[in-house]
Length: 274
Image 1: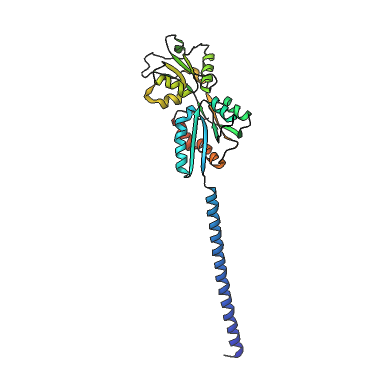
Image 2: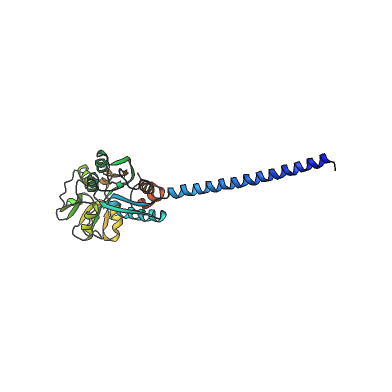
């Protein structure tokens, strides 16, 4: 082999070794980059993980459904907790505008939600997530043979209504007015659960409540539907509140309520789709 040929061969060997080293370096760099990207993605995923406690103020009629959804939410997002305050929507709205700490408000009527929005306590625009219709709750077996709204005007019956300021009471009054009926109850209750409890304890013969409450009571009460209830269906709006401590977690709970999964729980409880 000539000197020139040997020199060319050595040059090719060096060049090949350099290329190999360059490829190795490139692969290492690529590996580091991929690793860095994966780490970055993992960090982003970890930072997106929901945490913290969400305080939900909700209409009394939502107690069973929201309690179920709260448990589902906590199971799906370990490290979160959903606490509830259930009651008459008007009282809850007054508490919120009075400074009570809450992250989410679910009301039984647009009117009570408006109290909160007018005071500037809502973050964003409330959205209707379900509707609810009235039903007459009677003693088990309906011993008084209540068959209509008019039957409740019988002076021998002890009938309970929700307070007129509560969505359930306002809806009942609307149905009575539409039927041109006058009814004097033995008591006005502060929320729908309190009205239902009067019948469950046999302290009243009947109460005008929601279908969902009759459904939740099971065999503790009887249920009588009446056509006038179609004139007094309540829309239920929900909203994120200003000053929410864990905004992303609160938004995620609202998303669950509005999701197909959430709607399934609510419709099974007797609520109507919006």
